[in-house]
Image (cartoon, rainbow, N blue to C red; front, side):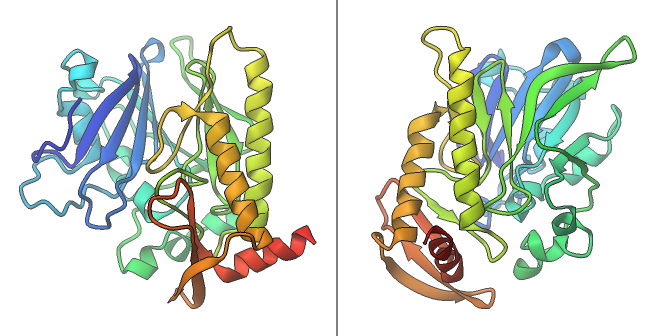
Length: 318
């Protein structure tokens, strides 16, 4: 593991020989986003799930600030003391869990390179939401007065299978399925890795830190998406070898945990908020709306969102 090394803006640890969690540490936004690198050596491909905050570190002595440089030059003990993509020999596919700044600011270096530009995958659920006209606002870059990175995603449908070029001039399926999971944002997606039995869900939910909805979110859609994910996981469990645990990894705080207890626990908490059994503890004004916070520090689940979203979801349940 590379942990809190002052030379790097990132730490890295292994879940399996080909699956790695990268955490952007000490970013100036205090987001500490989780980035996932999944190697498919048989196709010379890395699937990267999100790209973090762009290495903008609060530490003045950081030497390696660019995620791509970290992947291609920094030796990782859990990868036989070699970089995950030594010298850039693997091509990249980047899947964006959603468009918020702390998941896209590191993307520009992947848009160029000797192996060609990375294929960037995003949800096609609401193309208008991701249009160049609206992305500066929806990414929250406008709110923070930072430059929106330049990139052109390929918008893919629900249940899209991610593939890479093969030596036979065709495409080789990599074992990843894209799932549309609107709620946190309209463009939220999940990635199912059938080889490792892990589902990556971005900022749909996580533990210990507040689950946050922006103005553009929908708790009603979120509840539908979480129900879908729970059923999806239960269906996949049927075909798993005995003893296999399907795990969930999130955009912050939670990685490689048993999936169903995390999803079901978060759903129960949000339902308690919507039903009024969990009351708001604090309120503040943000981006033109009153935002309320539910739960308190130390709770497994907490929520920060515009109060309007709770009222809309409550009205839908009546």
